[in-house]
Length: 63
View: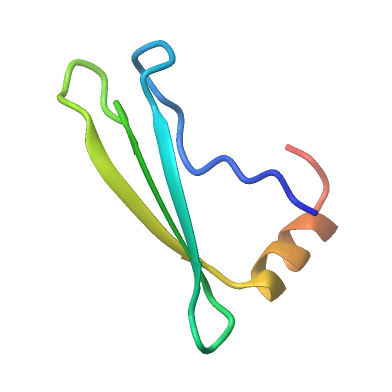
């Protein structure tokens, strides 16, 4: 189980409304809403992640 932070929200707690889909090839498509750029209006952010990528990141030392 992983906790994945895609990006820092710059405007309090007005964020989230997340959606997660698992595509046929096993890729996770995660979509969320937030204020991702200081002083800019909110927008929708989507990322594609593979479990193998997360596993590799988890092996790296914390920064």
